[in-house]
Length: 210
Image (cartoon, rainbow, N blue to C red):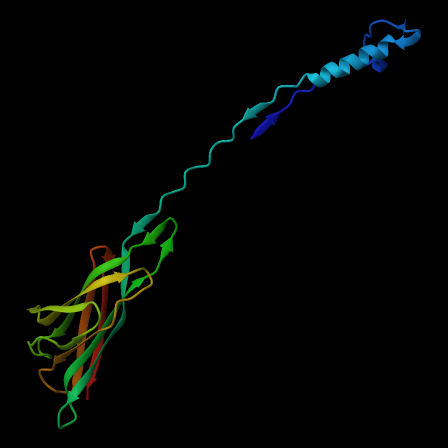
C-alpha cells in the first residue's frame, strides 16, 4: 500500500513573511499582534488535515492448482526359485513372489496418483512350465484370473484390488507353477504390471536348475 502525504507551508515572520498588525493593548496589557496571528495560523493549520491518497497494492496471483500425474509402477519384488524337489534333488516347480510399488515422486504443483487396481501378467516359456493353473496363490488383495498361451509363453494373469498411495506397495503375491522338466539350465520369467492411471512396470527373474 502506498501512502502519499502533502505538507502545508505556513507564513513565518522570522523569514520575512507578511504578518498583520503590530501590537495593541488588551485589558491594559500590550499584546503582540504578530505573535497572535502566527498562533492562530498554527492552530488553523493543525485543524486542517492534508488528504491521504491510498493506493491498493495489486492482489497476489492466484495459487496454481495441484495436478495429478500418472502413477509410476515398479516391481519392488520379483523373484522365482526352485521348489518341491524330486528324488534326484531336482526342483519340480517354481515358487514365485511379486510385489508392486507405486513410486513416490512430486514436482510441485504436480503429485502422483493413487492406484486402486492393477494387473500383473507373468510369462513363462511354454517349454519350461506346464499348462496347469498356478497353485498356492496367496496375498491380500490378489486373485488369479486366467492362464493363456501366446508367443511361445504361458501367460498367468493376476489382479490386485486395494489402494496404494505414492510410496506404498501391494501385499506380496506368492504362487507356484509346475515345471515341465528338470533339465539343467535357466528358467526365466518376465512380468508386466499395469494400471489405468499408471505407467507400466516391466521386469524379469531367473532361476538356474543345476
